[in-house]
Length: 365
Image (cartoon, rainbow, N blue to C red; front, side, top):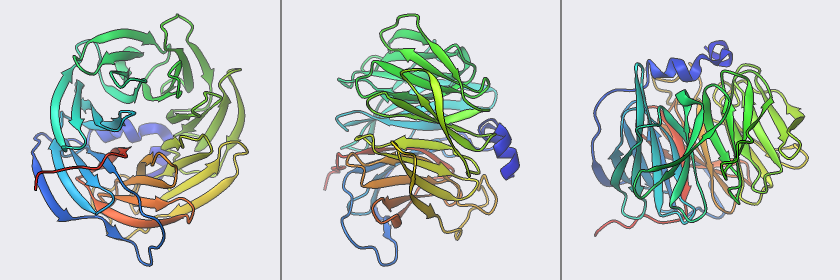
């Protein structure tokens, strides 16, 4: 199984297994975030929103007091989660299911833990990676089957502009802090795209490795990290020169990558090895490695025998990493300084994308 995922069949194979019809609304105040043994030190605050691909739902979790605040309905095949810069809004890309490409985005009010609307994007097929632009009214969304990134008005669902990626299967999106450039991993071509957000037709593609999926950019736009599903490496690209400058090896499947807001830390999830690793962005030295316990595995585990850490989001201060465990239907909180898991929380079936907001859920008494 690990080899088949490494050969790049994971995401497409996933479409045949992950999704079932039906969504539901369930508000609950059941204690959910279970501290790991001997947890000490500072605790995070805020909220995480987790997509549950097989359930067509998202789980909203208050990370401070350990409550599952809500389970909310989405469209079919919810994949990724994006959080607005002010933390008030979460978006969920409804990628669709096998034979039925999705074209909607679910909009969630984080503080109220409610779905406020659904955006229907007629010109976007298989929306996936997303990132908010400054001002929080426009989001960049990858349109996987059309080789484009759409700039969408979150208030109306209007597609304002379509930016070409010039790469096939443009999956994830990474955006600089200034939102002047965005980057996509093009799985079918083994490239990443560097796209001018202003709309100038100046897209450049850079060859990296086979089947690059996970991607992240330093906030200042200096370097891009791209994970190769098939070659089991992370390639670091100098974004200003458009050339690969380093290769990090030893992964099974470097599935998702997140870089902290200060540009210092890169976190990589590896479902094949059941690990989460952290690296110094500047010198690429490993700073932490967390081996996720393999107990309580579910039958739907994508990598048999592994907890399958997949989606990752970092707190704004970079002190905590939140990682979905697809093989355990949970999300974990990692204390970065200690390199230790300090809490677990339940999710729905096949938890995947995740977003972190500093806003706390405020439900009626």
